[in-house]
Image (cartoon, rainbow, N blue to C red; front, side, top):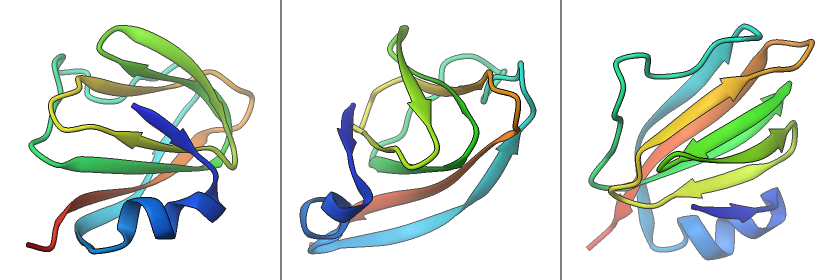
Length: 100
């Protein structure tokens, strides 16, 4: 996992790549994404934290997050978002693959 600012995102992450799909997901406080357990992708996933706070869990290690943070999850990393703040956590996410 890498952490970025929004200003870093375009030239470093999206340049020369294709956003395959994406969306915005809302998590109420106390919830964790992907309750089915292990969750990985073959491509990068970008998370932009729009509202709230909590943690992002990558391969079992937790990193605090809050509104304005941007994370790049590498292919093969088991990842989950955990909402722990007063406001529901809302994240915009994008699956990004190489254009070639």
